[in-house]
Length: 108
Image 1 (cartoon, rainbow, N blue to C red):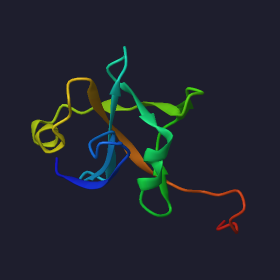
Image 2 (image 1 turned 180 degrees about the horizontal axis):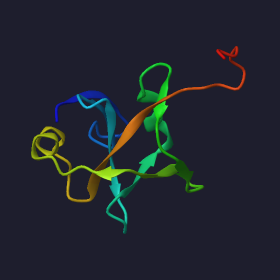
Image 3 (image 1 turned 90 degrees about the vertical axis):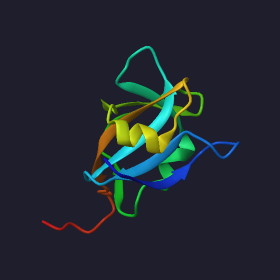
């Protein structure tokens, strides 16, 4: 899997980070949790999604400036080599969703 860097939300210029994959998905790098398919990311990371799209997964607000995000754990060696994530982080793959706003004109 090849990744394209979209942006990061770290004070030190590292991670958490958002990527677009060549598989038509987002790969999100964030802090590990007790569950292998769930990571924690800062609210600000979502500003890097591509225009008119969204993370195609439920974001659960922790109440302290972060979201919990569940997706498919990234195990692809090429993708992991591109990310170079520190040991306290993990990555999940989620679909690229289409942003549908309640105030948008109906396309139906």
